Image (tube, one colour):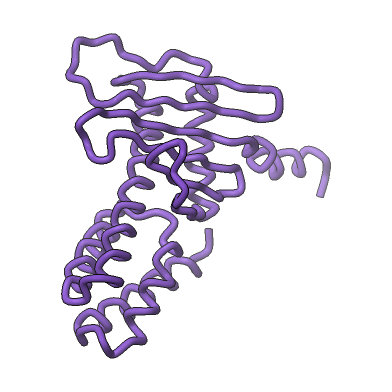
Length: 206
């Protein structure tokens, strides 16, 4: 491989470095505060307070990480102003921070008209939705077995609408349901079907 071709191949990897911190503060909403710390490796941590001692850890798929980093690059890794300044309703204070060694850029806003910022915001909203569905499924699996199939229906609907990311997060819970005859047959069958769908998606070439 010649030097120029090597540089073209390596460029996306070299650009995908550092850490992206995202938070949203929205009083009287549920939760009122949340944050996500996303590493360039795809490893992420979700918390509902800075002192949250039970964070949810998940890992984005490689194509998901590249999409997020690509959009972050388009907004100059938060060196540019994102706030629209329009007199719109309060939709929660969003903050981003990019850190890479000694480099650190941060920006906060309520509403942005920047299309790349909107697309990036949608990715983080997907992460939040993914974690919230995980919370719901975890609760029903542990404490409300008759509600498991309904929780799985919500999960399946989110998958169909392409609102789920880091779907491997669900593997332990889905396996627990699929292999345990104490759950309703329809829930076990749905869990097994979703595992098969996720596994098929995981094996697709990037």
